[in-house]
Amino acid sequence: MDEYAIATGLTDAAPPRRYLWTDAFAVCNFLGLYRESGDDRDLERALRLVDQVHHVLGRHRPDDPRKGWISGLSEEEGERHPTRGGLRIGKELPERKADAPFDARLEWDRDGQYFHYLTQWMHALHRVGQEMAQPVFHRWAVELARSAHAGFTHSDSPRGPQRMVWKMSIDLSRPLVPSMGQHDPLDGLLVYLELQTGAIPAAGAAAATDRCGLEREIAETGALCARADLATDDPLGIGALLIAVFRLASMITRHGIAEPALMIRLVAATEASLPAYASSDPLPAPAESRLAFRQLGLAIGLRALERTDVSPALEVRAREGIARLRRYVPIAGRIEDFWSNAIPRESQSWIAHRDINAVMLAASLVPTGYLGS
Image (tube, rainbow, N blue to C red; front, side, top):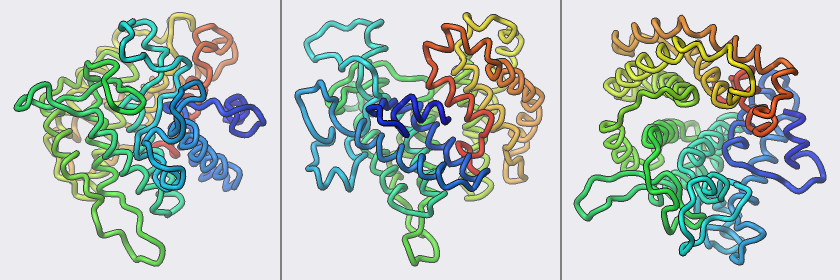
């Protein structure tokens, strides 16, 4: 994390190089390091990173003729509401112009907004709010949730079912990739529930009793999840399912969230996914044929599985499924050990994604920051 902070301009004189997914995990990592070390410098880096993300990815690119906050707010209002227009991905190339032809390969390198990156940032802001006990971070997360949901969710016809768009333009005015990400509705539902149950009390208040008003967003993503096939063969996606099991189990146990059917579906989808991936035995493969951040996403999910609260509040089928899944937890150690070795980190597959790989490895090794307590 020290190397990442220097390389991306967080603690060095270099211009900030921000990327939303990586930065969301990095904020949580600094919080975890702060909790373990008590070193104020780790907390300062988390807060500085939040500020940089908002002032870089919440504003138009330097090479864009548009200037200022992507929300269109004035400078003063944008400072108060930096997430109201969403946040750019941080890709190297500008977004595709409205009259330009679609190029699937180029689109991976073009800027815009991804819903699943925005949900990661909502979670990061939520975690900062928890650690700092300051409601402003929670408010920013909720404002981002409302803007993102409105921008990414629509119907193809006046009476047709709703769906989500995978990639939107920087100003959320047009789809760049109209297909729907497999787990985007699930990501949205879980972070909305997290924000709804985790409001931070204002200074001087004994408790936060008001919900944040995401009932409509929760209902709409819940309906989308009910129609979704959640099983996957992608290790990063399997890790996301495991993290979802962890978060939902915590909310059911601690906050009485009434989502037993979703919990059972999550466990069932994970049981359909993780054993199949493990049976393919992908871990002995050489570093050049592995994508570290995808495997490390699985490792983070397995660390979440270790910490999942299997309380009587969960349905017995969910508890039994979680118990069966826990036999795969040692895979996390194998992934961490491989990528902690200096030799695999000399491979081109690591170097090509160095920032995200390093931050995801740190998140697996010190998962408290990302997962919370």
